Image (cartoon, helix red, strand yellow):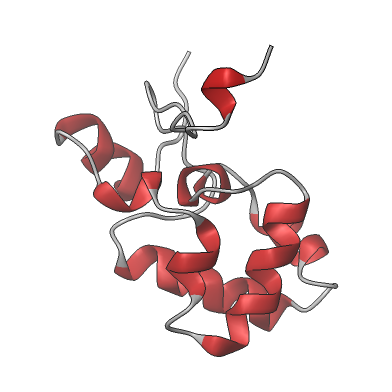
Amino acid sequence: MYSLHSDADWRWARSSRNPFVDQDIVSFCTPSPHLVELAFTLADHGHTHVGDVARLGIYTLTDLSGGDPRLAEQLRLRLQRAGLDLDMQLAGWQRPVEPCDSFAE
């Protein structure tokens, strides 16, 4: 069975790594002040890293942006400028372990 992969997923599979996927989403969005509130909303819903957000679909991102498709598209454009996109599979990527997470029992 064939599945569709974005160009960004193809580049991901062929490259060693994209350093942006491990960055927290708030820091990633800070250079674009209009995206910061969306970044906090994403983090509040458990999408704390760029890699988490890159795995989301456009409809989920639009929903989390309060139904504003323009805001979702602006974050998608920011991801694309970083060599990523939405709906990515990111095979092999796992969210980085936070220092405080390693002590949780």
